[in-house]
Length: 383
Ligand code: CTP
Ligand code: MG
Image (cartoon, rainbow, N blue to C red; front, side, top):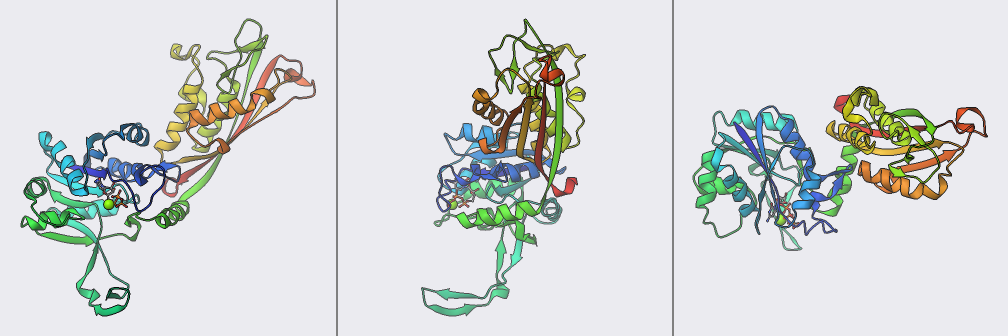
């Protein structure tokens, strides 16, 4: 079995900001989640440990929601954090382990393949890239040029026979803190081989790296649009649930669930954007589980399906069509509620309302209808 350790216990000082960089959003998704998803979805990897800083459990829980990972607690240096991940695997030892920086989001399947296959012959392997710039000594004034052909750039993940890297980390007695695990392995006599690295694996170290990463991500995403439409009958003796809120009114909507026509329209719009059928397929009215169900769970499920495909909700636009109640006084609360269910920013949610000038069933107050459009970005490969 091959396991992976993702170290995410740093403080991200060079990037700065309100949250450590591994929890900052990149394409609407925590930086950490990008590489963790790539590792989990690789068929050669059986188990993923994420090493987080003490006190950041809630941040990690949110960033990794729904993913099958185990957490370990990191320490003051990267080395100590890696060791904690290695020890977390000691009870159920894998054959191989890949050790990766959370700060390198764009991990490709090919790099993982190359690393695992290199471990057939070697105890340790890492992705490398040639140095393409001229290298020189410098103290502000440029000194002698260094022969770049004798040098290489080292990335992560770094791959090891588990026992070899565990023993090396346990035995580490170096004076300088190591910046990677190949150094630790070599210090204990473990030889490492190079496999071809990937420029996309660059580490996000400074603020400017996030702008570059966002641009790279946009090039790998495709925009999809979905629409949703729903109608429910207005009757006396029912509660009126609209956009996830209980609205005071003399009538309410009739349906199998709570009949929240607005959330149903948005749910169908999201399912439409990922071509995943409609709300009836996922929550059949014939299923007693959904009798009286609160519709926010339908919407949250559709949002989960988008993120499960590596997608991101860019925007939803809802129109509620009724004569009464007046939607205006509730509009901001509705936007907030929908944004909370979808876990998106408030400005990604629009709520509008219109009457039909007393025409038709909505005009006569017999029912309420709702229309929604959702824009979603999906990874290019699912196109
Ligand atoms: N890391 C860790 N534990 C530490 C220090 C670093 O798990 N005590 C992790 C980081 O979270 C990151 C990776 O090691 O994923 C590479 O480190 P680096 O890019 O230096 O991240 P930070 O240490 O967080 O950033 P900075 O050095 O700018 O503070
Ligand atoms: Mg650091």
